[in-house]
Image (cartoon, rainbow, N blue to C red; front, top):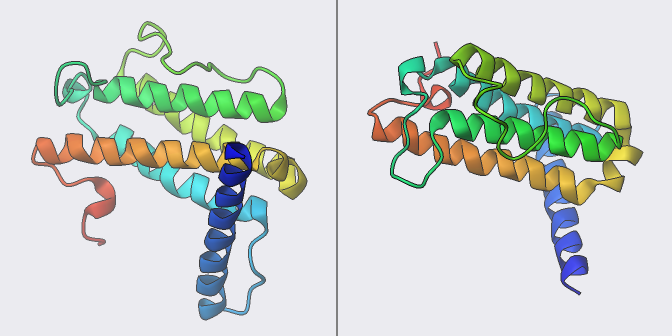
Amino acid sequence: MKTRLLSGTIVGVLAALAFVTAAKAQESSNKKPPTPSQAILDNWNDIGNRLVAMAEDWPEDKYGYRPTAGVRSFAEVLRHIAGSNYGMINQALNKKVGVEGDDPSPDMFKTKAQIAEYLKKSVADGAATIQQLGDAGVMKHLDDWVGYVEHMGEHYGQLVVYYRNNGVVPPASRPKK
């Protein structure tokens, strides 16, 4: 019962996302509504690229910042997101790609450049996987794809707090030039 309710909710969310995306697309031009894989891809890239912008923007000397004891540092959050992304990719492809795991060792990704590249690659590999799977493949793991996009979004919100606590405006909130 719980699984059916969750699946129904996720399908409803996906339909709403597709509807909103379709409405925006039709306002600007007469494009076809996005397919399920395109809707997931658009959302994956949107939040993934915001996180990559943060990884590249945040000062390296603050990568160890954590708002309070017991909370992941900025670097730990980014490694966690990328490792989780690879968990989803590996599940969808049924093979090992990248370095997965909720909390990859800090010894593997120590510097800002290494962490940012790891995150960037996980987002790009996820996008490539979604495109490779197409609608049929994405639909087989729809609940998971939606959940992983949401997971990235939750951590984006977490990192916004890190920015605000340090008196810094997150990249996505800055005025456009």
